Image (cartoon, helix red, strand yellow):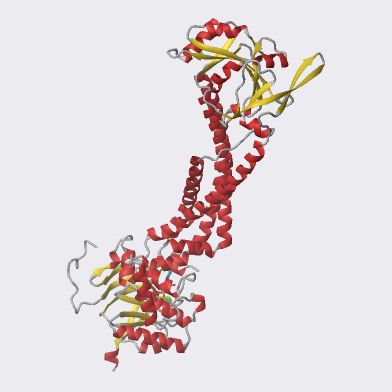
Length: 384
Length: 244
Ligand SMILES: Nc1ncnc2c1ncn2[C@@H]1O[C@H](COP(=O)(O)OP(=O)(O)OP(=O)(O)O)[C@@H](O)[C@H]1O
Ligand SMILES: [Mg+2]
């Protein structure tokens, strides 16, 4: 029967082509939007893995601001805390304050704490920071790509400080001493410099943006998080669990928006299959009548029409994935030179897109197929 | 067909291959009932070459489609090989159509996208014959109707007579009990008509039961028996033996 399906599709090349194009467009949207959602999911997952047992201690104001260096000691004294250290975080690009997801950051960290912070992240080149490193930096893989940096190269960092109505900009060159491997987390867009250098450069003497605390082996990080908040004045904490919940909530919304936009696009593709199949079925009423007179069963006719619809779905799906994949590949390439990636085409996304295309084709072929089987052979044969 | 009085009974040699009993078919044309068949009964013996003639609208095509299970009668029964096929369920009808019946249509009704070979082949697909067997048989049948050298031609590349011969080969594909031909020579010239009639004649001599509907008395004269229909009823039923 398969050859008959192919025959029927190739017989009406233009129409089949347009239908496949419609599906491909829909699946293209699924792949691109899905790729975006997958990327944010993966980044989140990897970031969570790297920072799983950290408790974030931040100033207890809605305005951000910073914490005094002394808070580090206070946090460390809370029973159950095995270690704590401060970070000073600043956006790398002072003009474009997009910190957090995707934005490049400068992070000041005590050199001896860098290994702990990075967990098992490896260096592709060079070394980590050491005591007394001064104007040296270890950079993430995206930073290295964006600014085309190798170990030994210099990276220009600006700091900006408001003084009355004017702002004074300081510029300093940092020598790259180490480059981190790709992690797929926010580590990739980090420039790490020694904490003391950072505090002086940004004129944030004795200040840190956040204190990271680690729980002792037998202490529950969620409990400990609450205890820190109670024992240390003017701070609020985010436990790993809370962070996960916060970000997951945002991710779900993001995924819902992207995926539903994509599904909508794909449904429009599905309608084009339905339309094509309805036309094709009514055009072939007589043909089905002949086949029935020859003894074809309902299921034979169903198989043929559904098969056509499914095949158009599959081919459209493959094209959509291929075009979407190619576009995403080049977009990621362009974006990578700006330090970010936006898309991840995961195997599960490919499988879901292909399944979706096939099922879409079949579902939209069901009604036309049903119409094809319903007519009595007599009526069908009289049809002109 | 479980609740059949003939169930389990082997058809005897003198038992007709086709028995039609009091067949009626009423179509509704809007609110007006049209009696296309109004009590038709006759038997056909195995190997008989029968023609049905009569004016347009007398119910000839309707009769064939009842025999071929393309439509259901309003009343009455059709038996093939002692089995009442007119009682077959919708799900059983395809099996009856492909095993008992071979159709030949006035306008050939070949599938235009398929070659001669594939048009014959497709009739056997629904029976589940393996591919190589189908090809073999299709080739053999096309050779028998004189188209052994045209197997890969599309219908559009064949003359009307050749197309009709392909459709006869297709009708023979599953060794049907009966071949039903509705004006098989209606769309071909006189010379081709001779070829078609000779072909059917030859098949009948080999024991194939054939029923031909025709307007052409020349064709009817060359069959064993002529049934004339008028207003959905049989007006006369003459076997060639009686004529002579
Ligand atoms: N599907 C249908 N719906 C309504 N009326 C029908 C239908 N099929 C046939 N008829 C009517 O039944 C009658 C018999 O039609 P049928 O086609 O059997 O005639 P016929 O003898 O084959 O005629 P012809 O020689 O012109 O082919 C006609 O009056 C026709 O109008
Ligand atoms: Mg007719």
